[in-house]
Amino acid sequence: MKYVFGPVNSSRLGRSLGIDLLAKKICSFDCLYCEVGKTVIKTLKRDIYVDPEPILQELEQWFKSGYIVPDVITFGGSGEPCLNACLGFLAKEIKKRYNFPLALLTNSSLLTDENIFSELEPFNFILPSLDSLVQEEFVKINRPVQGLGVKEIKQGLLNLKKFFNGKIFLEIFLLPHVNDSKTNLALLKEFIVKFNPDRVDVVTLTRPGTYVHQAAPKQTLSLWKNELNIKKQSQPNFNSKKQKNKVNLHYNLSLKEIQSLVLSSLARRPQTKEDLSKALGLSLKQVEEAINELEQKKQIVIQGEEDKNSFYRIRK
Image (cartoon, rainbow, N blue to C red; front, top):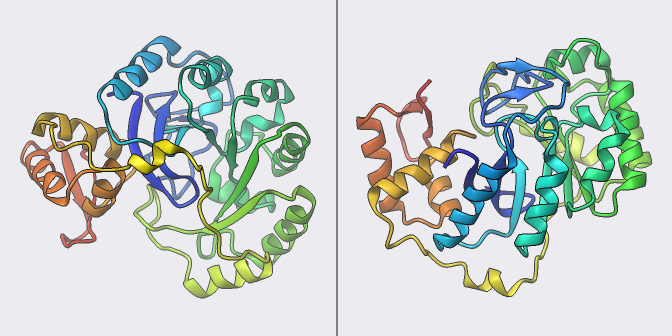
């Protein structure tokens, strides 16, 4: 599938079925740590980058196939989903057709335009990112479209809070010697008190990024979490009868079908065999057979040395 991928295991949302509204790396940022790859079109211009119909057709096909039940349907994938001008239409249509919570991953850059807020009404969760409120650090880590500033993004998030009735989970991504300064910590601490999101996550690299590979030390993450008063957080309790039926539904799939699922998932982020097994509801043996075949076909490669924790990605 080209637009529907996963499910992917999310620490914040559980088993997340992804919807890619762009199909290639079209974004307003070109972040150092991005798992997807280099931005091929850097823009703030909204357009119909992908027509809604093929996305809806793929989603219908996915659910008819009897794959493992997700916790949530998430707009994310290759770039900034808010750039697709069909965002609001797709959200309404998917919400109408499927009884699942809807989530949106965003880098917050399009929230500077209040006209987009009406399109966000169908979502249950919005997961914006904000890595630095120091302009120089913001430019260094997120590499945004020229002219975009942290003041506008900060105000956009505050405006979102006033408008949006669902849950907001803020993410801060730290890189050592890039945005882990005391100044940034102090500014974000002050902002979070005012913004008052439902959840805050401070994270760093757990798999190779596009331009960098060094994660922030555990001590730094602990310091930030303590300063920002972040307690241990769990995934939302969806309390759906559907969630009780999470079993391996993929035992009847052919090797070719499993390979397609694996490729679709790896196209959005590097993952280990264990990641793929848990997220896709496949046995480790099924994943290993698919991985071996895809390696032989030279469609995927290992990042780093081969062991049980090796990450696999699509061959460029």
